[in-house]
Image 1 (tube, rainbow, N blue to C red):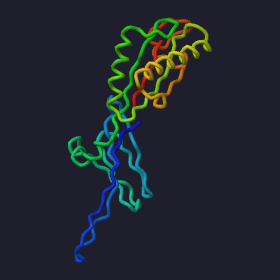
Image 2: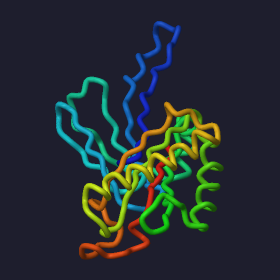
Image 3: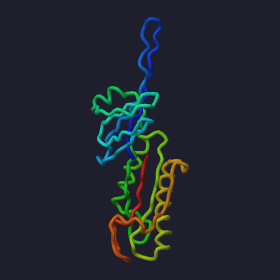
Image 4: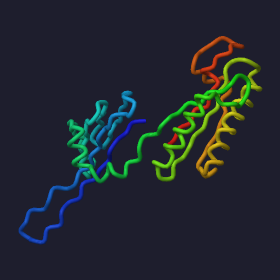
Length: 203
């Protein structure tokens, strides 16, 4: 998902009758860089045409009547910070993703993953009203229906860990994907530690 800033300018109110009317405000859309560096893009469309933003800090400006095509230019990180400082202050941070790994055939976390769990718990208080999306996965050992159930148990157990540590249950979603979304593609009935996992997204 593309990260953008959307700002609507406000026209100043002038008391002097002889003062020319100010130009109408414009809406500006600025494409922000992704936290992980992956490319993104957004298309801004008006009645007069469309403009595609595909590079970080490209900016599209739209007049309020929407009749003209958006104009395109490029700002900078420092200019965006100066211009949109207040807006950036209320922009939520991008989601953070963590991966927890499991012992074969069950719901027991590996020792390393318990340390990752602690990092997730450190991230949650940094976000107001944080929400967690928990998705369980398995490797290809065993039958498909059994792996569906196992992946859901893994996600459910991790969900309970967070609830026990004070995260509201209403802020957590859990789902199981079985062996459908392998991190490491393998043949059937292959024991692969990197596929026995739960992915936690904190947003």
